[in-house]
Length: 352
Image 1: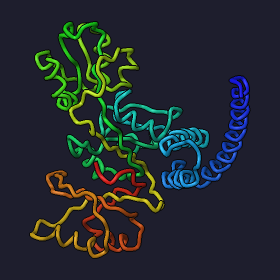
Image 2: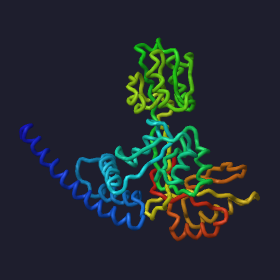
Image 3: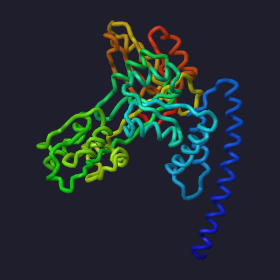
Image 4: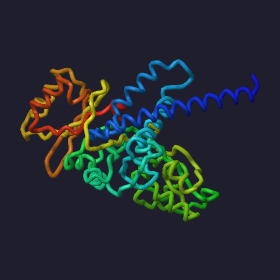
């Protein structure tokens, strides 16, 4: 078969795909109209997970599971915006890792606006200016994000999804030679995550200037030819800043988990995780007594972290399963006076 013949076949398939996409979007529109009459949420992570699982099980072609996710998640995002365009607030600025986490779930067509603080993200979702909020909850190197725990305690919003993003840093600069770099901009945490690289290349002797975000670092370095930025590849691209070194972080398995919060709850998907805040009495054995109920019900706990909220010790606990599963529901009812259910959502990872 000639190249022209192959291209002709591809064009024909593309025409067929376009026709099928439009047919799907027409059905999506009808679903959206039904949801609008009931006020039901447009974003249903458990339904998307069900579709992706079915497609992967019936896939016998060249597409990998990752490719199926990439193609269909973007299509889901387009469909949601046709149904009912809804704003997403995220911990900014633009090109932050939180922004990347948001786009990985909601696609390129959604309406995004950066918010300066985690509390601000919760506030904007609570007052209805945004339907969804995206905030970091933990990093594999730096642990739990206290501000997010505090806001989950203070606001009546639910976790409706989690996203895990691999954190890779680059060194980007307008300088033609590394000897010309006199200062490096970045977020303080990013400096700490790249100590080996900085030491190996002699950058530990260069002035390190902490700024609010790695995206801000890229912007400043683009305006300062004798400087560099430790930032994400996306931030470097946005500010047209040449990348000199890639993947400069000390821990190549550095990952951050993000929560998506909103004002509704998910139905069970069959592959769920639940997060709780638990305020136990300050007496010996109270935690063991509480956890014994999970052991007796054969429920797999995936995380237990102590935290201080308003001077009171609380536990951030996660486990496999949905809050409406019979055994879990029974435990929650038994301890309802000390439990705040933060949300049940499709499980993306066991832990980071």
